[in-house]
Length: 113
Image 1 (cartoon, rainbow, N blue to C red):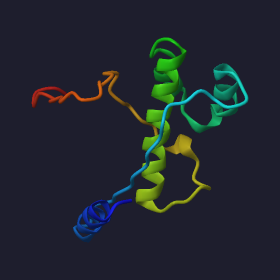
Image 2 (image 1 turned 90 degrees about the horizontal axis):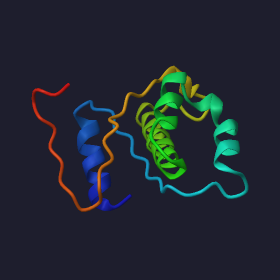
Image 3 (image 1 turned 180 degrees about the vertical axis):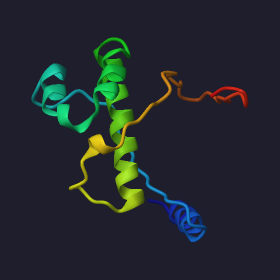
Image 4 (image 1 turned 180 degrees about the horizontal axis):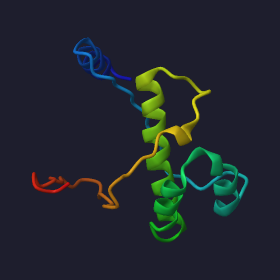
C-alpha cells in the first residue's frame, strides 16, 4: 500500500472505523475451467452470493462478480482482523448489479436504497 493509503488507513482507524483493503484482478482460472473453479470455491459464498454471481451474465461477467465478492470478503477479514480461519459464509454480501466502467464517474441518488 502507498504512503497515502497507509496514512488514510491510520487516520480512519484512529477514529474507530474498521478499514480493510484488497485488490484483485479478474482473470481466468489457471488450471481449471470456470465451472470447476466455482465448484472448488463453493463453500466460500452463500447461496444468495452464488445466485448473484451466476446471474451476472456470461462466464467473464461471472468471474468479475466472483472477484468483486472475493475482494470484499478479503477486505472484511483484514478490517476485522479475524484471519484466514474465518468462515466466509458468516458474512453475506448484497452488491449492486451495476457494472461500472473504467474512467466513468457514478453518483448514487440520495433516495436510492
